[in-house]
Image (cartoon, rainbow, N blue to C red; front, side):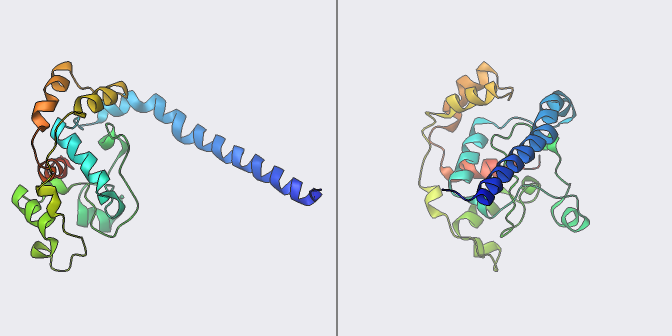
Length: 196
């Protein structure tokens, strides 16, 4: 037989969870649903190209998001170091959102404005060549593996359902834009798009 105090504690816990979840829904989710149109109008964000989208998938699959954030907080020190603070309208086409919270490596929100493609190639091959104190691992296999582009059109169609304004023409051309590119090509293309 369960103790009466234990039963009351579980009941209070359940009620508390429902209250917090309801509050979150009312303050975060519902207002965002009504503000989406305003965010789209205010945003200068552009949908990712097929190659950038493939690079974003590689960024996620290689775990880059576990060490790097993509959200410059509106704190003077962060803005001075990483550039313009991030706002919700900057990432209206992000599914899933990659703001992150781990800061093992530098924030990448405005990275596309800083380095050349060649710098990124060297950095992915051997990070300590360009940043001697880096603890980032090397990614030489990214230069060997090639994309086939088979699933990129389906990804773009799915994102279009979520509100990303891809055209039929962009989706039709996607496979050829990605086919035979290296993983490094795609990842660098994605990194160069950040903050632009």
